[in-house]
Length: 131
Image (cartoon, rainbow, N blue to C red; front, side, top):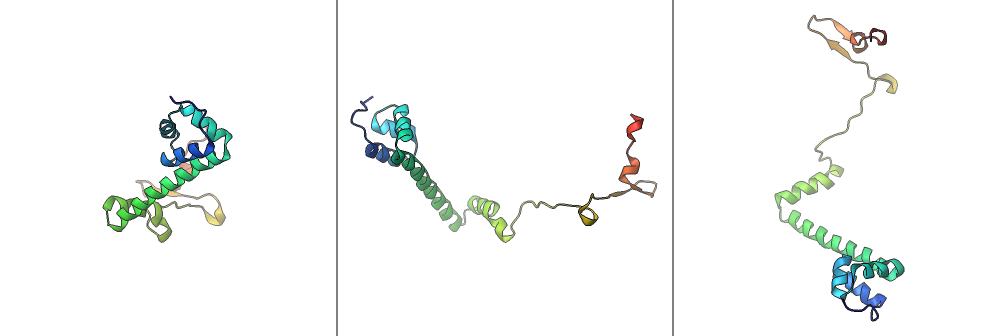
C-alpha cells in the first residue's frame, strides 16, 4: 500500500465520490487501507459529508433507472412501483381494518352452532374455576 503522507481531505473526498460512497473501493483507489479512509471520514467533516452525498447521488442513479423501466412498461418495475408508491392513489395489496364494538368498546361476536342457537362467544368459554 502507498503511504498516507500525501493524502489530504480533497483527495479522499474525490476517491469517495468516484467509489459512490463505498469506502473499501475508495481505499483501493487511493492505495491505502480501508481503515485509513474510515479515519479520514471520522476526522474530516468534508470527507464525512462526501460519503453521504456520494451515496445519495448513487441512490438517485438507481431511482432514475427504475423510473426508466416504469416508463418502458417493464412489468416488474410497474408492479414494484404500484406496490410501493401506488397506495397514495388507492392501489393496495392489503388493507388494515380496525374493528371495534359500540362506542369504540370491545367487539361482541355471536356464533351460530349446528343446533341453530345463537351464543355469545363468552358463553362457550370454560370458566377459570374449571381448570
